[in-house]
Image 1: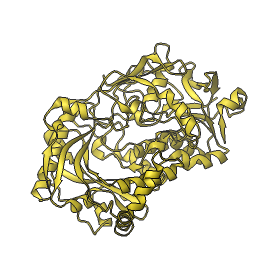
Image 2: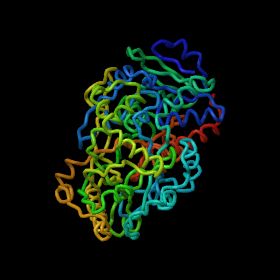
Image 3: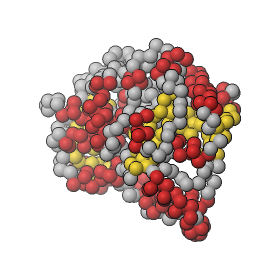
Image 4: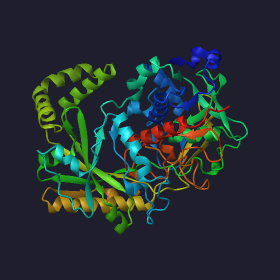
Length: 530
């Protein structure tokens, strides 16, 4: 069942099961916890600050609650990477999935703060479950995937330093749209839209419910059996701080709340000049088999990381196409899917009609050969995706400004480390060496390769905030334990990338769902509270 706090009010909330688990946030983490509990027959109330993904105007209004402050490096993910809507940021997501590697979970002496309190065997069954949840193949993310595309031979990377890497796309990335009908029909999960959680209710070191506000600012309390914060790495930390009169956090690890903010720094380092442009493009652009799509990449080997004291990283070749006709077709198709009218409708139709041969060529390559765009790219750049060194002073705090509900906004102080700069440069030079030695390309170094100021001016976050309620055994080092329970507090749990102690370089959503399904299983095994 789906209801709206604006219209349902306190009376409807009073009819909800007082033993239900309250899940805060309807994005990937919240949906995985809620639907995982539903599969196990446990009652859930799913609280979403936004509304229906089909209501574009409501989405725009809800997004005003994402306003915040940036006091460190520029951080576009504060507002641009978040969505208050059923489905959360997955409504903006393209669907890339990959696992963290075993080495990402291990303590690495050359990377301060590295290591998870969970090992590969703890995550393996939940990664398998998450891959099934997303409809992925489960065939891994390594060089073996090239066997599915025998018409293209891979680039011969030097295996001691560089190794093939893949991500796989889910065909249904927009989880709010995907699961809305199931939630509407559910008798186990009650979804409450336009219900913004502004605090956790705590009595005698036990979470007993939450404080909610509707869009008018009216506040109500809702009690439940347990509370799961699944509102994203920025908002999870903010809710914990808003729940504390001192603005610090909850539990015995409260002093770590908001600290260790990480993302995936993305920086372009090389201009690539291919000797065989189409050949290189076919091996570094999306590969297709039916509706399944892979993205071939290259990553640093574990041995290379250790030998040169580097963080984990991978890279892609970004191909730019100067083809107005194909771009017009893409805009028209995107508008059709989103049911919107592009501003340039007439011009796009004219350009699309004139590009029929190029569209036909692209369709042949896509559906017959499993390759990407038919026309060679006009420019190619190397783009590096980096792991971050966990930094206690990279953090989210409560800012001086207020949001539309009158509450302190999130203040983001994102910091970048010299080790990340060095990794991007060493990695780039190894890629350049292999491309040259194979006779595939010459390269030109971009300013970020030699000038630290240029690097910092060009680097951007990947809309992948993490680490702000990190998992730890010791409350002095994190906010939640290995069951994702807030240290020292009964009944309060956190789901999502905020619990990552270190985030690797991998796109985070598959790991988010794996941990969330694991949490749902744990919650279902706990006794009912009295």
